[in-house]
Structure formats: structure tokens, C-alpha cells
Image (tube, rainbow, N blue to C red; front, side, top):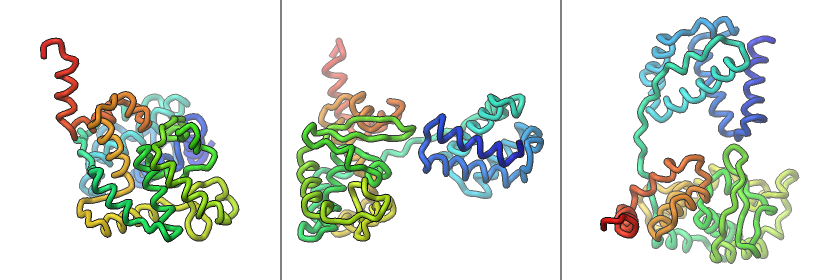
Length: 299
């Protein structure tokens, strides 16, 4: 088995056994290719000869030559550690040199959040007399009601929409399924979109199952939804940075501000670890004070 075949088998492993999304696999592939190019790796012998000091030099080059921040370097390390761990398990190499490498510290940036008033102002910019305006309103209502990632939103299928039960079904990262309650406002505007727009569109072949389509009958792209959000924010007079992910942050923050259980928010967001969800606690110190006041035995 040559080196390229080994690499291809690793990508199959990520897709089939790990169940990673195409976006995640593409990121792993880019990180690995950068590493391979740096060391001019052509065979397994080249990889076996790479030592700890060379890896440290490579990490320094990610900072000095590629100008990557700690978060990106951390992701590169995770990608490469995953690859070398797999090589070790498959007995292509005797040990994984990345086990000795320290991870750079990551300081979580508190995400930007919209107030309820700002969200209402953006929604009001969607023209109810325009088919695209109705579609945009339905998309934002769904994104905010359920805290969806942008990929989950644009990939959303008809068959996962259950208005009678007031739930949607999402297949998130790692093909993990979660059921998320759906608010009445989101249902109202999705129904309006279905009845007046979507049911009258002829999808391009291969796009029949997607709920949200562009004017040409194809699935809406992530970039197009990003542009839609930017334009609506500008029309609403919002100057803070706004992206599709802002609605996910706002969803989580507003739930916690109103007393939602952190574990429930974790489940709805699809976070593998509750430490990821805990960042939203920093946005509302009053919530922490209220929890302490309510449950601590010495108030």
C-alpha cells in the first residue's frame, strides 16, 4: 500500500467510522496537507523520521509563517494528532509523536449576542410581499427558535419538520441526532413560506428534499445566507458584527437569562461537552447569582 492509499484510507475512516461531516473532513485534510507539504512527505518512511523537535519547529512556523492564532494552531494539532493516532493503531508507525506535544492555551471569546429588540428589528426588514422575504423570515425564525448551526439550517430537510408535534429533527456533528422544540412564531412563518413560496417552486434535481431553496430551485448556500443576514442587519441599523451564528448565540443566551437549565441548552445546541455551553453563563452574571441564591444552603 503506497502513501496516498494510506491517506485515502484515513479519510474513509473519518467519514465512515468517525461519522464526521464533509466540512470537518475538509478541514482535517487541509491541516494534514499543510504538514505534508512542510516536510515534503512522500512516503511512510518520511513520517517515521519526524521527531518531537521538528514538530515544535512546525508549530512555530504556523505562527510566524502562516500567522495562525492559537485556536487555529490548536485545531491543526488536533487534526495531526488524530492522523498519527490512527497510524499508530493501524501499526504503520511505532508510536504517536504528537502525544508529547503541549496544546496552546485557548481563551474563549465571548460571542456577540443580539437583544430581542434587535432580532425583531431584523425580522421586520424581511419583505412579506416578496417570496424571498418570506423565505428569509422563515429561515431566521427557525435559526433563532432552535439555535441551529448555519450548516444545519441550509441542509434542513422537509422530512425533519414536525409542526403538529412542535419539534424538528436535526442530524448534527458526528451524525448525532437531536430533537429541538419549535416555537409558534417559527411554525407560523415556515407554514407561510411553504404555502405561498416553497410548494410552488420546482426544485432542481437533487434538491427536492431541502426546505429552503434559492430562486433557481437549488439549496441555499452558507455564504448566501450570511449575505442575507448582513444586509438585514444593515437595514435594521445594527452596527455590531452579525452572522448566522449570532442567532445561535442569542438563542442560548436568552434561554439561560430566562432560567433554562444548562443541560437542556446543551442538548438543544448539540454540544458534546457542557464546558462548551458554559461560555453563555459569562454573558449573564445575574443568572449565576440567582442560582447561587436559590440553591446554596447558606444564602
